[in-house]
Image (cartoon, rainbow, N blue to C red):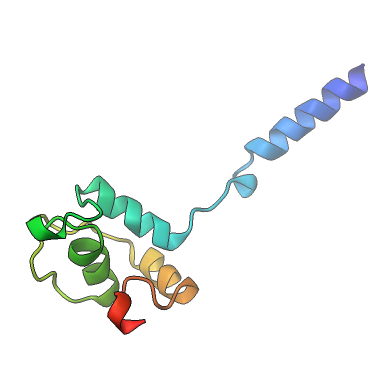
Length: 96
């Protein structure tokens, strides 16, 4: 019985450790930041589109053309990790 309890406690410690935490995809972090800033998928006609008005300008480094909201600040290391992992992310369909 003691061995089972000790084993379970050890398992709990391993699962709770920071090393076991799942690191979110860096591109998904950008998506989440844009959503938190109020950008919505498909709302590009009002200047609040998730991709056209937020993600694409952040990834390309170009100013948004029609955005009605300020872009969120994205950590440069997250942006570079996203570009390294998914080179075509945020480039739009016509550039892929």
